[in-house]
Amino acid sequence: MEYFSSTVHEALRMLEAGEVSSVALTESVLNRIDAVEPTVRAYLTLDREGALRQAEQADIARKKGQAGPLCGIPVAVKDALCTTTMPTTCGSRMLEHFVAPYEATVMTKLAQAGSVLLGKLAMDEFAMGSTGENCAFKVPTNPWKPGYVAGGSSGGAAAAVAADQCMASLGSDTGGSVRQPASLCGTVGMKPTYGRVSRNGLVPLASSLDQIGPLTKDVRDCALIMNTICGYDPQDSTSIDKPVPDFRTSLQDGLKGIKIGIPREYFGQGLDPEVDQAVRQGMAMLEEAGAELVEVSLPHTDYCVAVYYLISPAEASSNLARFDGVRYGFRDRSTDSLIEMYNQTRSHGFGEEVKRRILIGTYALSAGYYDAFYKKASQVRTLIKEDLSRAFALCDVLASPVTPTPAWKIGDRSDDLVALYLSDILTLSANLAGIPGMSTPCGFSLDGLPIGMQLQAAHFNEAVLLRAAHNLEQRAGVVGKKPALV
Ligand code: GLN
Image (cartoon, rainbow, N blue to C red; front, side, top):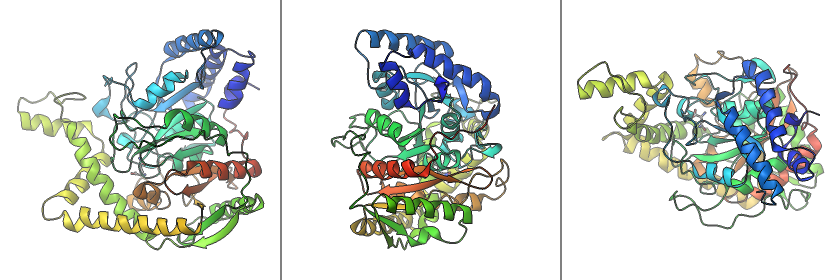
């Protein structure tokens, strides 16, 4: 086995046993990147020297008996997380050469745990998209089928993990952006409860929905990264001061006594038969592990897309107002007029999708329309939350597909935005309600494309998700299967 293909927990075992050094692990992953990056296109910034330097320091720390929980593990993160040693572009021309003056809390936590930062991963511009195609610099490909989408917006983060170009990564999830690419690329991906992980230093898309979460090769690794990144942070006013359990502890437990709810509305029109079949087989595995399956209803599911595509652009339009060419980022210098400078900067700095959403969001918030759009959407958001509370009175975990279809060809859906937005339907309610959700591989399509199962739980109940996901993973036989890239 080559080092690059190992999971975080396998690599930690090897490091602890002195079978490998962090420098050797990091070199192995860097070689892997050299071999497959021309195909996968996941990295926007790769910091070779910095990574090797950190790996050397990790080896020294380990020798001194000062190894943190991720000491010497090479990781990479979505380019929406602020770092002071390399640019943070958010996939946008607007921030092409921007180096943040402070780092995200999760980056500090990863560094304190001893991990090695390889670089920053491709994403849809400002996290708007589900394919990776909205990135201004690079469109990642699906390692299982080059030429197919890796998903989005954390497409690079999923592709890099699936292609063994890092041992684990972090993405952000506003409407599915960790879970959907995880599902399409066959990795594990979790969106924690809103407030569980500090958003300080995450370039915001929609502040009431955004959460940072891990993408990993297996469920145990997801628990390990969660242990590192969760916790209260006074720098994020929405962060919640609640004890963080050791997420590894209940992984081994079976599912006896656990009720798994199957939301009727999540198996509706537009669901690909292969996805339907793989997810139903996954549910049978959960049942075998001791869980009881119960049918539940989430009657307001049909409104999720409309509600999300009002609230998210509305919040995005105010968050993106800061990009005016004055303080930082791109500035169009072709004019002397201040107003023209704003216009030209925003016209040239932002891509099409970002501009479209700024227009939608500004309209939805404007005087006279606010009540009809933003306020109404917020009211329906409450109904969606109430559906979930009622469901969690009847079950511990909800199981469903993550996305209605496996990955598709790059370019195939670029002309049909409504279809693209609609394909987010199964992941949006977790963000609207603030609950945790995750994607775990449960099978493959006949074409060899991965299919994920989504598990969702009540607020702060990530532990039960990880436990159910671990049971699924043990039975699904997907872990350890690798795409044939080179
Ligand atoms: N696909 C959704 C969108 O385009 C979700 C994005 C996200 O979670 N960042 O907005």
